[in-house]
Image 1 (cartoon, helix red, strand yellow):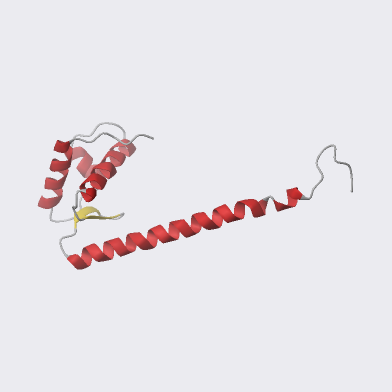
Image 2 (tube, one colour):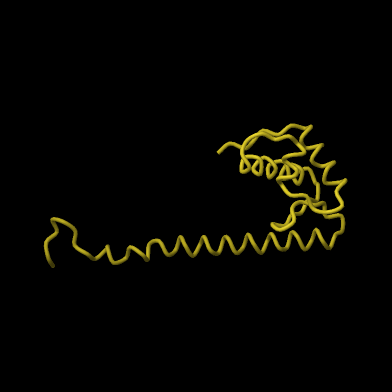
Length: 121
């Protein structure tokens, strides 16, 4: 899937909204303020892309599922946010590894079952 196209103006406007905010801002609010088109999921995807680019440019933008995006001005908030992201990533990798390992186990019984044309042993 292609990444949504973002403009420099969108990046700058989003950053200025976050800098001016006194509380976290939801993706829906940011999408409305940036006049992004498309359905809600497309708008959220565009906001995630904008936030990703801002982070790649060194902006310390944190987020929570409950409240939205905010700039982590304090080092301890930024550190805690990144540590939580690392834990989430490790958990996701662990779950993926277990699922991938379980795939062959699920079909082990079929390895020793004679198929059509093999006769009975």
